[in-house]
Image 1 (cartoon, rainbow, N blue to C red):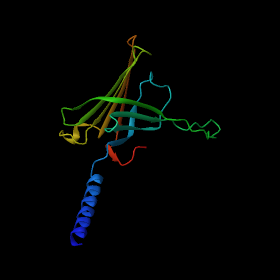
Image 2 (cartoon, one colour):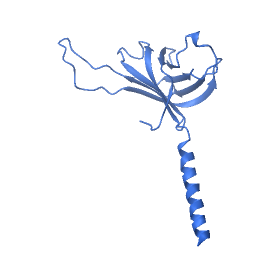
Image 3 (cartoon, rainbow, N blue to C red):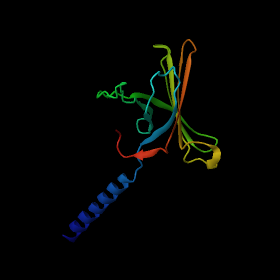
Length: 170
């Protein structure tokens, strides 16, 4: 009887410790709110009001999400229709450290053989860097570029807050 009770207690403690250690595993999903954008006119003639840069290390993807502003006419009446954000998701093809020790996640997809576009997103987490803070680096920086078969290129830059760990993928 004592052995059964001791075994049951030991198994319960092991289960509790495994559950606690499972919760200690870092999230594979990180997000940064964009606070400054330099959009190439080739990408869009629209302005964007805000956006996010996201890294999902579980799915091995980098994502750029740009929100359109709400449309308001000259009369001041705003449309109730909400436009879906522009979302670009690419597979991570490389991860490397910058000269300052930041981590860059490079995502790329080459569609030039089908529709003529090479897409690339680079998201750099500068918060872990070794360079002094006066270098002018944003905590998170992003680049989105496209290049078509004809050689036409588009490069847009994004600057955001520190990448924050998110518990659940939206």
